Image 1: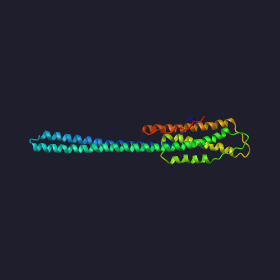
Image 2: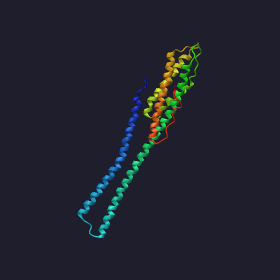
Image 3: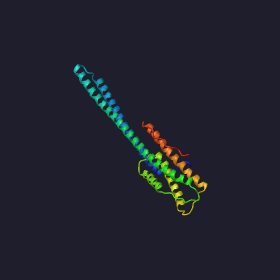
Amino acid sequence: MRGLAVTMSCYDAPPKMIGDAMNQKRDFLIQIPRDTAIGIAGLALGLAMACILVRVPGNSAEWASWVQAVGSILAIVGAFLVARYQARKQVEHLQTSAAVARVSEGELTHVVAKDAMAAIFVANQYIRDFESGTMFEFDLDRLTDVQLSLRSLYSRAIPTELIENVITIQRLVTYSMRAVQQRNVNTQTTYIIQDSRDKAKARMQYAHEAVREIEQWLKRERSRLGLSPVTDLAKAIE
């Protein structure tokens, strides 16, 4: 994102390995019942044909026994097919549950990011609108709170696609705090040059862009799962 994008391979690698392992487990669970059912069916058909070729039933009693034996074999094959179907449904259920949980983490990320964006807006708007020649006083509590909230996301299973945006927003909070702190220490009248005001506006724009990307990801995932779209941001910055 315009020079603020950060590559975090230490965050990307473990989730990718976990995803690959889950896919392998899914394929393994589906493949076993299918191969078993096909093998059983082939074996049963082969045995039945071999026995028929060796000895064809000669009377009704023998035919009844043959029918009963074939019925038993078909019942076994049916049981394996049912097991395969149930295994596939279980895997699909697990995948859906994992996808919903992933979206839930994305929603939490979206809420925290929007809150941080609001704090960034307030701080940098104060810098942009500050009247040079007066005392600069801005409370950092709000920025400190959102900084802690953003850091708490790293201990959660947030989607890897959103990590870069979270890091970007966290850095913008840090830059905003630094800009405020540098002027809060001034006990005399403060003068802010145009370049500082432009940088404040840029921080607001970058924050909005990062949150917008999180929101777009969340919309796509919710649409894919058949969920209602997430509410749009209330208002874009000027």
